[in-house]
Length: 240
Image 1: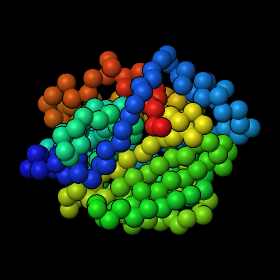
Image 2: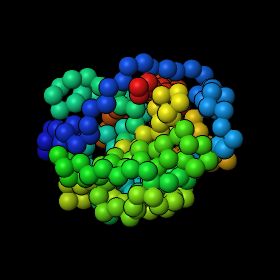
Image 3: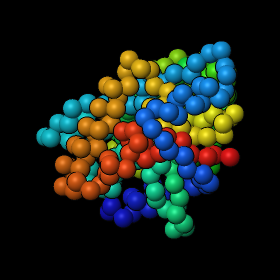
Image 4: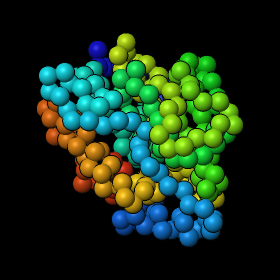
């Protein structure tokens, strides 16, 4: 069963070609990008779009997550290495979440819905929300159904966007990608996180990875020593 679902994940999550990998010290990506874009407004991420919670070992629920052995990972790190459905290697410039089908994903930052695309080959939607505070930034949300938004809508952090595309009757998956059209880089979301919330959400990500490894009985699933920030193997990746 797990092999079949892994193939489904590789099919639905489209390959993205990454050319240059950048990584440096703690949160230097934030400073360098703000200096580079020279905008009067500031792009700030307020959450990660999903609800985290304590792992209930009787129900195997944890906020929006339902632990099941069918999946190799419940969270895909920014910069994780995988293969596409043809077997070609790729590095993902996204954070990926495997969550319950009835969980509504919400906006991670303010902005305006700039583009919505129906992806016929996988029967789901990709859409982009461009920041109004700093228009060089756009958040791309991929593999959604049951959209709660339309092109031109003004979005605030926490607004419901839709559900993840189903993989099984209970569980689906979606991607988040933070791009800057001036630097032409995709960024780890923690590079631009609200400073009052960043520690809270980094702890949530670390706890989710720890709980998943305990559930699977394998402490090698996530290599936290390779992360420059919790849940991120790199600060930024070239998306040009």
